[in-house]
Image (cartoon, rainbow, N blue to C red; front, side, top):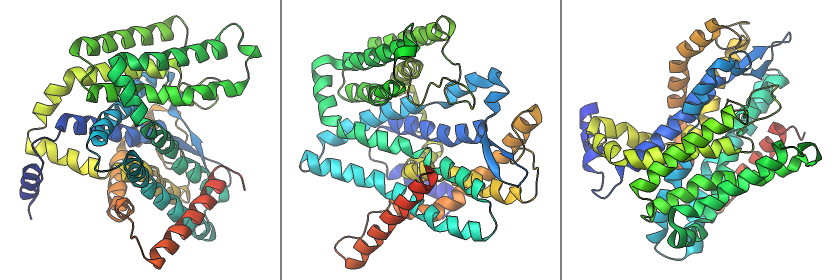
Amino acid sequence: MSVRQLVSRIDERTPAHRDRAVDGLRALALLAVPAGHWLLGGFTLDGDGALHNASPLSTFAVFSPVSWVLQMLGVFFLVGGYASVLSYHRRPSTTGAWLRARMVRLGRPVLGVTAVWALMIPVLYAAGVPEATLRTGAKLVIQPLWFVGVYAVVTALTPYCVRLARRLGGWAAAPLIGSVAAVDFLRYGPYADAVPSWLSLLNILPGWLFAYQLGVSWGQGRISRRGARLLLIGGTALFAVLLLVFHYPASMVGVPGEARTNSHPPSLLVLALASAQSGAAVLLHGRIGRALRRPAVWAPVVVINLSAMTILCWHQTAMLAAAVPASFAGAVPGLTTGPDSVGWILARMAWMPLFAALLLLISRYARRFEAPWETGSRAGHARRAAAGLLAVGFAVFALRLA
């Protein structure tokens, strides 16, 4: 089958009621994850030939605005809430069954990548890969998986989000941004020294639930274009004030050596950006949908959405598949050299197509972890139990608990 025929078939098989704009926004947010990690994550090579994490933002703070574009988790949670409320209203049976199905779909790929890495670690160590490199790699692989856990929690709250959206519309997200603002005031305000460090963890749930709740309200038809403009203008204004007046860190991702970070856990700046992105997404919804009526534009969106969890779980492995072999060759610009020069930036951009190609190759085999599990057989239960044990072992290693 030719590419043109495949593109036409994908377009023909797309249901007429499918919201192409939402799928397009999800695909854009998904691609921003590997692009951000590949561009803003680098390595240094120590005297023993081991790789350690480094960031170009430590040297080039001027590039922090790049993270504003690549930090699109607000959009991802927005469309997640939108899609979840539609799925929730179409659920064929109970809410519990709907939630179990969603959790299993999220959990299968995570279990797959962690189990495979648990098997790879002793093999790579025996092949001469330094333990420090393996720990660096394990940390990178497990880093994006926190998102899956948070997303699972907010998905479980969908029934409550639906009720709030019915009563309050888009304003249902207002208490969440207020909660994050209060915690930020305590941890960054005049009495910050008296506040325990764990207080910042209170921002995790409301910080990521904010855009999801907006998505639920949007899916319920409770966010008008006027409301979307308010989100866009208000979020942009708040973002500017937090940066220029309250001196929040400019980078939306963590920078090694910096005392404050915006994303772990989310600060008010993350919600301001999510608000602006959400407003823009709602306003552009119609235009995006019309653009995606073109089969050649729509087909890649379908492929990306079908491989969503595979992209999220395996993109760091793709980068490591290039960097770890390169570490045996010594200093390779853009792969194993420190991200502290313009030359590194140019070299890293040149490596990006290779990372993408490796991810495509890995996805060809890793997508099987997104397929439904075999049920009812003793062998299937045994495989899931073994994968679970391997995943736990990998988590212990990655979190340096052993």
